[in-house]
Length: 321
Length: 78
Image (cartoon, each protein chain N blue to C red):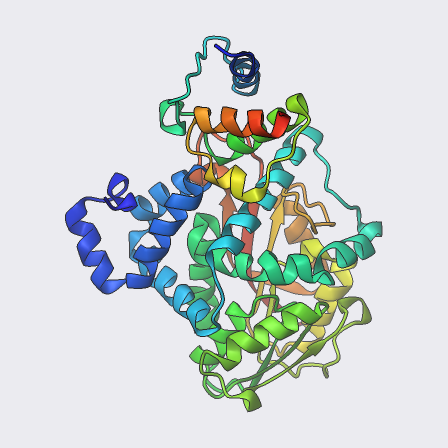
């Protein structure tokens, strides 16, 4: 008997199997290996996000297949590690490391192949289909950011590209664009190059390296047509300076995609936003105006939760005087 | 009830803040509305502390019912 039968009528499963074979097989495995962790999410995704979930899951699983990496264990392990951290946060109200302890996060996570290669990068990539909040953020990226990239765009950047999904989608969407960018992790660089290389992006279309945002951005003023700064703000000790640099380097009117999270402890979150006003003040005082915004409080997805996590995504433009 | 089961029942009552919970080996998350992923992690932390054991990630994810949780605890405590 299909594990999915407790979520979908048998007649529907056959149809989904035809259209989304990778997703059906993956869900079967996920329910078998980790039902207790994903039960509520799967219920939500299949009931409330079926239109977006199925095609996005199939696309991300195809991407995984193309890089010949197992997507199941990384997603499970990443999810459990994040739940453990948030469980501690709900008792302590504190993050694991302070802004003065960035080097600890670097050593524990970004420079640690046992974390980055074994589950972190691929697990985080998978959450963009299999965590309802990240799926919604991902759709906001596709619907609002990609459509805001000018057709004349020739070069953009992602700072802290991590798993490479957003770069891949931007380069697919904007065929005249090239991408530059850096990440602090050698493992993120290798993973992202694999994602791009094995998913149809010609190597001459990207120039990615290693770098530290504390050193600023190595790009000319007003040189970038678009910028992606996703899930970086809460990871760095100098978010104000980094945002000023984004504003400096991006052209007037060029879309800047920024995401972060408040009240969300992770193995590597060091900047503790307590509410979205703090994030918005930070954007504004560093030269960015919010054009569009998607607030994603966990309570919207789980009405009975006491977990105060709020994810948020913005499309910004630089403020021009 | 075995000793482990008794201790486990106390943990469930404390974690779910409900003194009326009666656990059984066959009980699953489907039988307890509040037993979601976060409460599962809270349960695991409470068990790790009470029995002085550590669960592997695959064990945390793969537990199907209270009986399996009890058996894993007993194996690790032996």
